[in-house]
Length: 191
Image 1 (cartoon, helix red, strand yellow):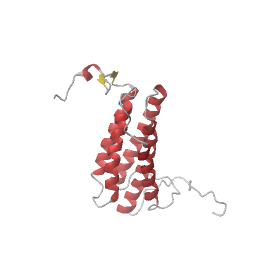
Image 2: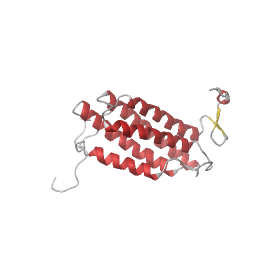
Image 3: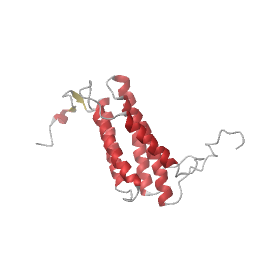
Image 4: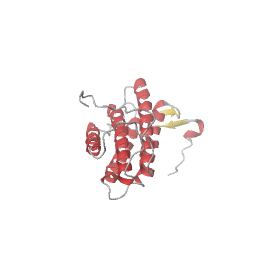
């Protein structure tokens, strides 16, 4: 099998159903951004210490990210969707679990710190871009797995939390945005 098909030579690509789309079609842009996210998460995986439980979590999440891209690449319900609501629920449990390891946020967190935390923040911002592309695709097409948008939204939260965990575990602190007063205040009147 050849790796090159020559379909792209004229600015087109074929998706799973065989349908031919321009390479700048919003569907291609959406799953292409997911592909980029998957690669960046793969890079982050190389920086996660083997003994951290997060490494196994992220390995599974990378598979689910690939499922998201696969679901976006298949139009007209050509096959059943791969990503299920259970993946979103699992991600929420992971977020809640890791939040217990982090202090309460009172200031914005600046992306950076350790190399691992910085890479996770890059992944988080690409997840947010993927989310925007998926919203645009959903506004133009009805055949999108709605769980993909929900999952990518939660994923950006997960990546934020584990970037914080990485900074705290490796550096002992976080990079705070200092050019503003405390912004995340308790809503309780006695605080």
